[in-house]
Image (cartoon, rainbow, N blue to C red; front, side, top):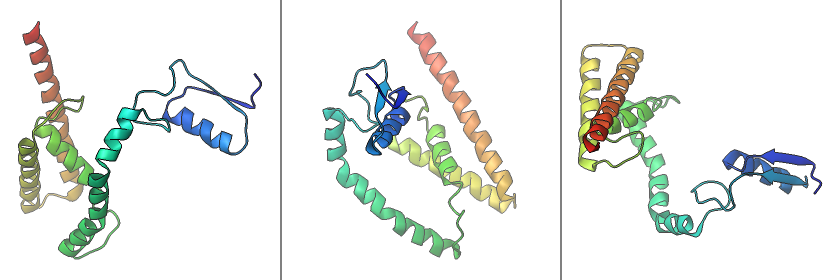
Length: 166
């Protein structure tokens, strides 16, 4: 077999590179040690189970995506400004709230009630730092430290559970 390009690794990056090159008329040979289609929810070839899940949750996903502009308008109205970096710390706050609530970053289950309590805790910490007039950059550092402490506590908890099983 003769090919212009050989792509080694058929993961998401390798598969998408091979597809883009093939669409441009380049002869591509994709080498991977796994069989295709992979049974993952990524790439261009999805297994039938993944397609069923996507179809089942398509309405919820479109509803969530449709609410993004509304959330942006509400945040802009609340803050009375429209800067581009307003929501830059929101991913950190969301992840910190989930980890503080006991949702493991290594996979697992969590309870919605605990995540709500984690979000309330993050809000209380931020409100306290605002009342103490702590600068916003230092507030981000404090949230990062809280996240690190929560991850360490999660790791200790997982080790403790593993020791109990042994």
